[in-house]
Image 1 (cartoon, rainbow, N blue to C red):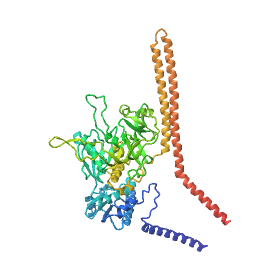
Image 2: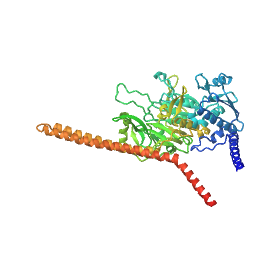
Image 3: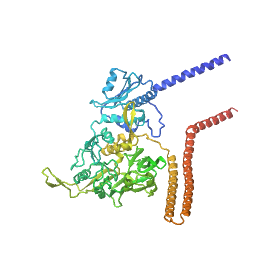
Image 4: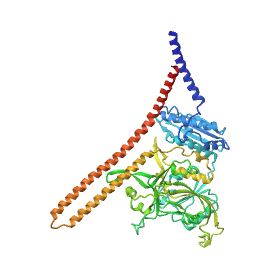
Length: 620
């Protein structure tokens, strides 16, 4: 018995040593092996990345700076640094020798730290002594072009592969494609109006392309412009519209943004007519009509299912409401087959116009972004003069038809200016334009909204250890970059951009809230109707004054008391609706918690019990 216990103890000790040895060996031999169980495969190197790194014409050197010792008191950063290192090693392993990876420890006041600072990496202060920790990447190609990721942020883990592949791609393709921008908005800032800051979309575009501000008064677009981007062509001169027309018919590609109500337009009311709203619309219907298309200038797309929730000040204080003109378009509203939208999950749009295809149109028309069937065309003037979301909701009537907000258009179309236009030459003499292209094949993306580009619709700024870091809250920027890359002929990066979702809303909870709010609004409107009716009765009684004043006063008191009772009863009903709303949400939350926390362990326990019973039965 003594030897039996000794053998048993030795066996346990041997098993423990063997387990530690196996874990250590596995951690060193199988570092690059991972099982990715995420829905969007966030941790699997995508075909786009593999295609880019295996097709490099020359090697790329990657220097990964990571301050392991300095970050020792920050386990989250240490763990994320290991994740980044593992992914970089996978890049090097699958590149076929095209990527040379070095891991560098920049200790405080060392030569390596000086190199990190000189390369543009951002260090974060980690202690009172002022020591800084680095977690960044420096890439260099054979011609000494350099690109950096100043600091890997754990909040961007879903975009980690994209950021690294983009850096490698830019080093492999130092000559950027040219994007020509013609805009009626202050995308590049406007010092004359005191606007110095550019829109964030321009900064993002310049990471990939050479962005050229063509201006809205040009009469010719150079052939070296790979893609033309037209934004809010409001009051463009006829010469500029003709230049766009001829550029497209000569085979140029374009991304066109028009808007029936551009909230980023800084137009001021006419001082002579201060009560007339300024014109904030734009369109290219002079061209689109010949293509068999039209974007209405007086209608806004509204969708009861996609409306953003905003905070408003109501009679009961601050409250949240669905704002119909602002749309939160999710994956189901995007074309999953098109390069521009196939990998996107969320796009925000505001006061967007509807793109209509005429019955006699003879072009290829592929919707990229559309609403649900539970949508309507809202009159633009209602947005101008009525800002209350609840009033808009009360006027909502579903058209039972999805509305197209962005589309890919291709086909042979006629020129909108078959006779050309007159352009004044340097001597200020009118001269007809020659060599007009009267028909050609176009390939464009048309978007019925310009607010999709506005910073507040897709960007937030976070303070990260004293550094202001822009953070995407929607895929608006990705949609633009995807489209420009696609039109310019590059699609490798599209397969891996924004593979993770920014938010995972509880759609069932949102539906419960919408249903309850619909009931709440109906009852609130009923209360208001009763109030108006009672006030009218009281006013009528007061007008009928005279000899029966005392009697009438009693009738007034009775009417008022009756209304108060109705008001109390209705308020109770409203509270019951709100209580039922919260009750349904809590019930659903309890069910989700049970499924996520208790159901799986319970299933495993039941399987273990069944397996034990079967084993006992076999022994018996």
